[in-house]
Image (cartoon, rainbow, N blue to C red; front, side, top):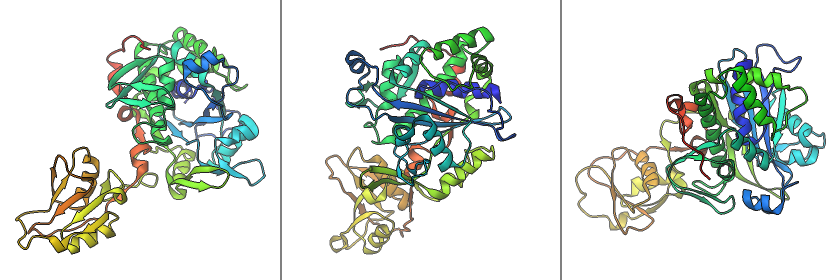
Length: 438
């Protein structure tokens, strides 16, 4: 278990800025593995104006946790599960006041100790180790370990974080990596996409360090640990020897045996007076997640955590505007959650032969796939210059409308393994990476 612990812990450090955990705390439950809470702090304390400008972290810090990952290391040393806890999660603080707020506010109210107690309160898990760092510590750790692998199939720009990343796989400096893991206004806006990028960075960093031999033997591992300890903080119970012992097994941790997930969310914009927009966990699914970790079980493939819908949808049908020339189909699609306009009054007297045809403008492929999932057998036709609506022309073939299930958790936080999540996965074990760019 200790060997597996190092691999995940050392790498989560690089995304959250924390240092890796040591062995299980005295008195930890036997046979249940080790839990490490890793946090990155949103604070500008001690940074000069030049450093703030270079890191693109201007403005006032909240003195709160910006990143929070709970790393579960299995007792048999064959699995590690990393669960991200979004900073805006709406919880009750564990200070006896009954006050509720965003989980990242626990640090401002009571520092690391209250953060740990709050996480234990809301998850039911015992935290064996707590680790933290800030923006500068993250940058220094990534640079010290030779940079981070970042990838994207789209051009990512975020003015707030300063991110400007072109499509492809990049060997990035700590400064660029910090922008990548902080960006909240790229792709699907919000915190869950950002959290997924943090997980991907952890997975790929682990793969690259393994390939480069940074954890292959006691000497190399000690060098890696010393690099981390220049810029990260550990708890009092974690020694250099613990970290070296943990790091020795990182090369034997395959991406297939690392799991990554985000706490399942039920409400994504729960407005609370005086608190703002918060995230409310899905009670049943999050409880199943914490129970799996408490029982030292895998979280991938657990349908209690991530149900498998009969007809999954890529996008929310409520945002798909549809004009339908058949009253019955229009009623059924409306009942399935789509925004429907019934145009049956102007439908042709003679229906065209065949299945329904969905016509739409270029660039709306994801919404078109959602609508097509509700209309099995329908043909899709891209029409340049078409407006924002989807036009459904019903033909002579009978139409059965299916209810589709949209689950945003599936897109950004469903349990997955490192080989599926990362840019490199198992490929990184066969080929190294190039120089770090800035």
